[in-house]
Length: 419
Image (cartoon, rainbow, N blue to C red; front, side, top):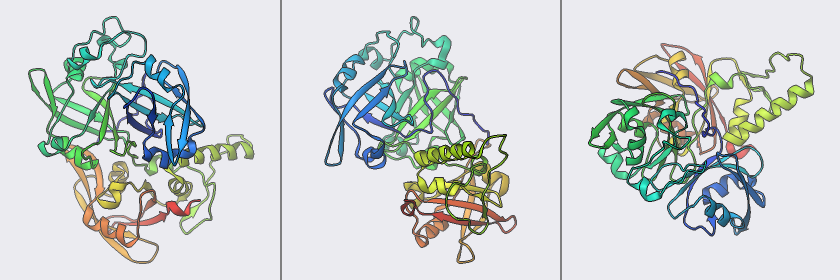
C-alpha cells in the first residue's frame, strides 16, 4: 500500500482535532449534539470562540440546562453574517484551547462557502453553476478550492456506488481521471474507479470495499477536500452521532512517547531519549504536554497505553464502536512490516500467560494495491467478549513471536480505570 502525507492548505484544519458536524435548524439558536456534550462537555466554558478560515473569531455565549448546551447570545449575529440557512452544515474542530473551535461552513449545495467576500447564491450552487474567476478559489489554484460533503444513504451502500454532488463535478470534473484516490487520515490511499454519464459521476468499483472497511452506514457524513494533484482528495469520516471517527495509531508514531505515569509492568520500561541539553523540568513539561494532547484526542486509556516503551514492535488501538461489534482494523504498516506483506494468516492473541485466541489476519487488496489490514470478525469477537472490551478501551498489540507461529501479546487499558 502506498503511504500518504497529511496535506495542509490554506483552508484546511488538522484532522487530529476533536471534530463533529451540526446541521443548522435555526438562525436564533444552535444546540450542540448530545454526543458532543457527553464526550467533550468539560471543554466548554460559559462562552465559546468560533474561528472561521478567514481568521475571524466570534465569541458566543452558551446556555446550559439539564445536560443540554445551546449556542445563544451572539449566535444570530454569526448566522446573519454568514447567511446561514436551514440545512447548512457546520464542521467544528476543537482547537486545543478551552472553548475554542475552528468552524467550517457548508451550504446545502453541498459546497463550502467562500469566506473572503465573493457573493454566491445558494440557488446557483444547487444548479451546479458557480463562477470562481473573480474569487481566491479559482480552478487555476484548486489547492484552495472549497471542500464538499456527502451524506451516506442506505441505498448507496446497497447499490454499491456513491454519486458525487453535481456542484463538485462542476468544480473538479475536469481534474478527475478514470480513478480517484482518497487519502484517509490513517494513512491509507484508496483508489476508486469513477463511472461517468453526461455531467454525473459516481464512485464505483472499490467503493463497496471502502465502505465495508470503515464500517460506513446510513447517516455517515463524508468531507472531501482536494489534495493538490489530479484525482487526489482528502477524505474525513464522521459517524451518524456527528463525531469524527477515530483513526488508528501505530508503533511508528507511538514508540517515541515517554512514560509519564503508572508503574512498570512486564515487558514495559520508561524511556526518555536524549535530553538535548534540556533541563529536567523542561523535559517533564514537554512530556506532560504530549500526554495531555494524547488524552485530549484519544482519551486517557490510549494516552496511558502509549506512554510506555515496549520491548518488541507494537501498535496501540483505541476501541471504537465498530471494533467491539465487528472486525478490527489494525495498522497496515505494522502488519506488513512485522506479520505478512500480502494475503492472510493465523495470528494468536495472548493475555500475559493466560488463555489464547486464534484470529485470522488479512490484508485487503484492490487493483493490486494493499489498502488496509484487519483481524476478521469471528475470532476477534470471541476475544472482545471474553475480555469485555468496551468503546474507549485501548489495546497494545506487541509482537512476541514471528512467523510461522505469529503471536501478539495484548495489554488492555480500561477507559473506566483511567481517572
